[in-house]
Image (cartoon, rainbow, N blue to C red; front, top):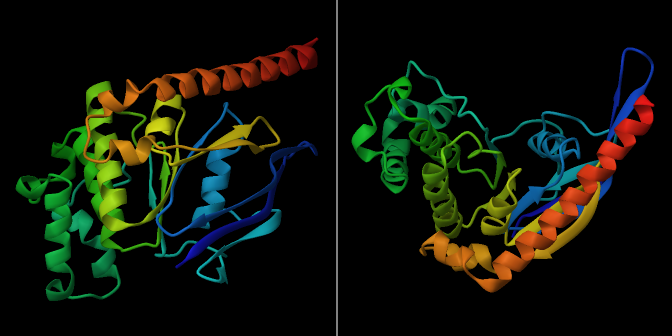
Length: 269
């Protein structure tokens, strides 16, 4: 089993005017293979900074990330990223996008073709594989992004608000797809979101981050992701514990936002 370890991570950004921003402070946690964790918190709490450090896009000021017993020092195929906007090659076909990673590794069609076609079928794009990406809706493009990430067979999938730009109905369908892929592939997934409801649905572990300097405020272990696999997510939302947890976390984040606003007003006074 592979383990993703976040060990005493701090991140400080030095500004041109001589001041600095402490984005993260002493964040530590561990994810085992196959765990699904959502990360939630007020604006500016360091959610995306933490994800970028996990991806290897940023080097932390202090601490380290380890995966499979080695230190993360930069981007690597063992960690796949799905962005809010798909970051796809719009001039390529759907199939060319999904197969891009294996082709860049030097694999032949005979090696990757079957898996790519299987992934396209899983995400519901089998009949669209020859379409150019620009011809697809936003929801379909995010399906391509998920399939492309999985085609590289990463150990960990990192998602930076991947469903934030979608309409409500498409977003719910994509939430169901994320749960299906999580259960079928056994991948470790870390998902950043601003939606409390989405964090509850897509996090068997849910991390609430405190405002700057970003740190872990509270962690929940929840049953809703497991309940949502293969089930209508609207039924999951009707569970009495779902509503109670949603209100608890909303109140928690609202109090944090109030604290941030109070600090801002004091600074401006």
